[in-house]
Image (tube, rainbow, N blue to C red):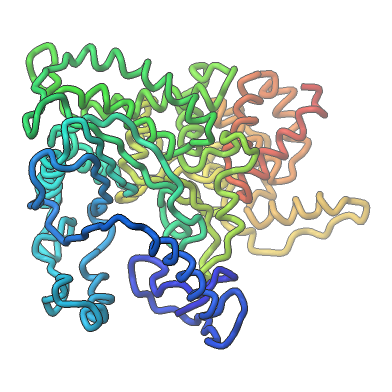
Length: 530
């Protein structure tokens, strides 16, 4: 057992693995502090005591979800938290507890094997011969069984929090093909922001609860109505427009908001057993989801820029804003505090560089802003941007896409040979005594970044480029060049420049260089008479 802060004695797993850790706190069994064994036993006693007065008798039984023992239409409600694609090796991890529990529980409880059964486990694990097709096939069977045993007027809830869009698509496809209508999707804060899983990976802050109903019909006979592709696509933007502002008002932003819009969007598609195009060909779920991402992106941009017309900005600015909003929502949640701040305040479990983990990706203070490639591609596609043609803004490596930090864009923004990122290799020049501490610190930072010889740039091709150029000029302590760039070159006379800078200030995570630099540029606005 190990102690974590003042929370008390906790379980062995900090995540779904048994890592080798350098140290952990041993608790004193006789201690009476908040992290003592006695307190933990007291907490459990207080949780169990109310259950002892419940008069109704329940029944628990272990069964294969793909071969359910209940009769047709028997259940009024089904709640399931299915396996998350290739995320967790559930059976292997359960063996850790299984070998101990089988010694203290009755044989009738199902603890009969040497280890847990694994042949029918519904996961993606190539080492066990279980590919994506196996997972999708088994999940579809399980969802169909849930549909079979549920009353036609019943309700189902599917909990899902896997970050992979391929995992999402597989789960949604299984639900719809099984005869369900997805009527809602709600992000519920079920995950601790300080958990290790959230601090070192692109994990959702919430679990998404998909609310489902059986399609009209009796028993296992689903409604076979056919929908028109044109009608479905026509209704989609209206539905998203209704939901996105409501979610933002409730503080649901970023990736959570995107996934929360899935339910209303899927209700349009899943109310039909088949959606056909004008030529009679079936419209696939994957095709529909592309339109969903596009509709969500368009609506999110209107929220991010509020009274400004986002369509007046070039695609790179819209992609950057949407990317950062997806990571954490910035100050858009109405609290005035980035959703990454909580992670910033959390203690770290490793000696690695501190990270800011949002709800859909991860951010290192100087390492860029990372999303899963497929999620980034869908966002970009919805904005009319091709990631592969945006090398000056986005780096794609394997299954990850990284929005480049501003410092790594210096060469693109200032031309070959300028704005080099490597260190200066020497000590900063001696400062005049009358210079302020802030000026000296600025020169040190510029020297370390390789910006000591930076010259005034030609205005970038896009508003985003010009904002980033200004940020680097500020970081390099080139106040006169920045003033000339904004006034004489006319960059600061464009209202779009200040609107984008203001919104980026809200979207960049607290503690990043970008946040500090854009704040510095905005601070110059009043002095320039803007």
